[in-house]
Image (cartoon, rainbow, N blue to C red; front, side):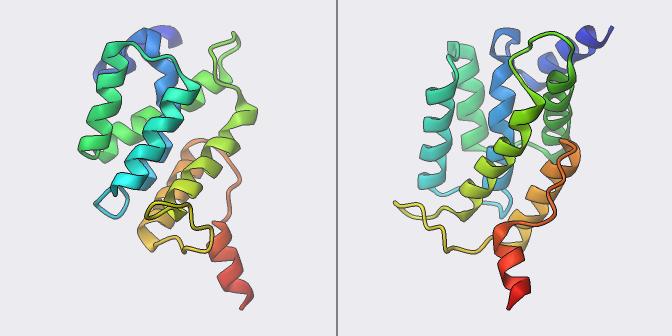
Length: 156
């Protein structure tokens, strides 16, 4: 029954069943679009991450290009995040492990911090990006707390 729900969800999201691991890119896309724009450097980093970690079909690559061209709706993002958590909790090996969810959040924060041609770790995270990171953490059941930027700012 749950597998049928996932299958229907992937169909609603336009993600080919064989490319379900592409869902792992969605947190990065969400935080990159959080402020309403996605600079070319972030698009390139997200594309490189997807190509490096997943073998996408032509249809899966088209879904990724769509995410990089236009921001997915909030409803779309939430459904995708819930699918990631479902896959991580699935008893069989679905290619998503609970232990890698915090790493996905860390990748998303790195995307939020990036700008220009080089990754600038000193760059702050905007309030929109911070909100997106907190929502990702909540939907993935990660005890996130706050971004490094927010933690460091609170120490001052």
